[in-house]
Length: 229
Image 1 (cartoon, rainbow, N blue to C red):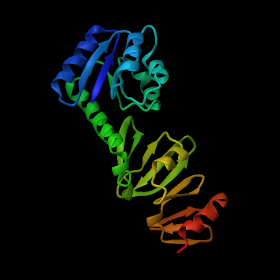
Image 2 (cartoon, rainbow, N blue to C red):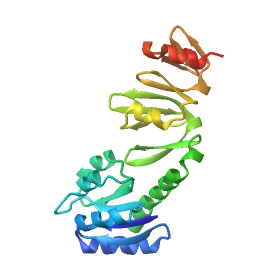
Image 3 (spheres, rainbow, N blue to C red):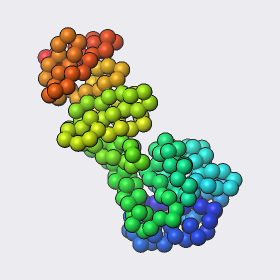
Image 4 (cartoon, one colour):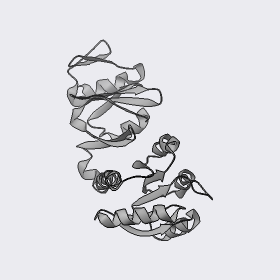
């Protein structure tokens, strides 16, 4: 993966440069101490990944990433843990809290590698798994393991076979767009279910295993059409 690093502290950049040199996963093309110079570079030479400090003098790393307007992965680096939530709201791959060791750096880079491979081959693997950002991590979920998805205000809960549910800050609409439309159906404003797991439909309820999922009035016609033999 091609990458650049942006940090106003030369020592921090030197550490990232040394860590990148120790792994064959990252081609660190350049380092910057100013966001303006980094932006000029990215406009000419897009990269796959940014190592981006949050606390920058001219513009914060968070603001820089919001305004970048490129589909590029980011790993935020900072000494201040209070920025972590906002960082992950921006779909960061990971958040490195300074000072970090090489092992923690590699863990973040591995996440970026797996997500990069997913983006590169999304069409081939779309029917196998998806990635969800939850608990400050990218979590890989096999589509066949999904029992149902439950909406909870600004969050949703992915119920999974034989493991704990995954709770993510994400809308039902955004989740529905990630799922293969031939395999999953939204049956209620708060529920999405995999079609293959539906066992029976009765009295505006869907039944499978021990679960009972309500069918919303505005979704009833769509559900009936899709589930009819």
